[in-house]
Amino acid sequence: MKYLVIIEETKNGFSAFSPDLQGCIATGSSKEEVEKNMKEGIAFHLEGMDEEGLEAPEPHSFSTYLEVPA
Image 1 (cartoon, one colour):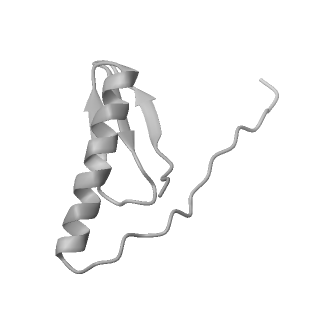
Image 2: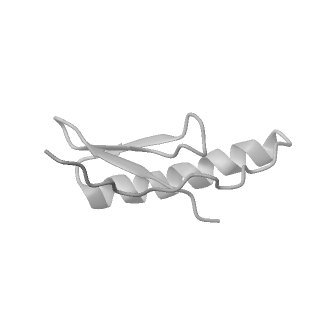
C-alpha cells in the first residue's frame, strides 16, 4: 500500500506523519533519514495493528498544491 506522508522541516531537522495512520510519526536530521524512519515506522505501526486484530486502513488522503496570489 502507499500512504501519504507529510514531511515538515523543523528547527532541528525534519518530522513526518501520515494522515491515514493516526499516531504514526517519525523524525530525522535529514529528509532522507526521516523518509527512512517513517517507512520503518509505518511497517511497525501496521504490524502492531495486525497483532491487535485490526485491519490496516485503506489510504484515503492525497495532496495537491494550490496557487494563490501572494
